[in-house]
Amino acid sequence: MSALFALFMIVVSAAPKLLGAQVAVESMESIGWPSQHLLLIGIIELTCTVLFVIPRTALLGTVLLTGLLGGALASHWRVGSPLFSHTLFSIYLGAFMWCSLWFRDAAIRKLLPLMNSAKME
Image (cartoon, rainbow, N blue to C red):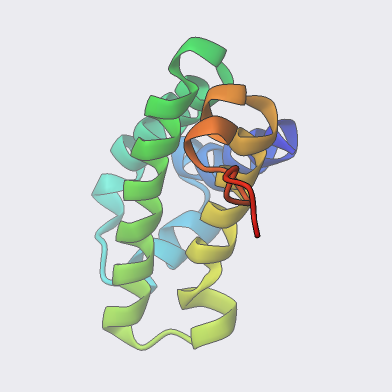
């Protein structure tokens, strides 16, 4: 799951921004961001994704990417993008990211257990 998330973030999201692809320019301008910010946002996405992939910094990368995805959600919400396909896509992606971290990190599973470990009566 982590590899799928990282590949998506690098290939589909960060790379077009870093390369200045027309699809990235149009996407950014449609949500009100000038294309001059493409390179910086692409670098931030790539850096946070690398932090997510490295086991020692995975939690930091996940938290930073959650913030980035929140900004994307807010940008789409502000311009009235379609709710389920565009605006909430950040929620879907963030949930996938957190689930993949949960599966690969025992400390996260202990911090966020699916069930209460107390005996049920």
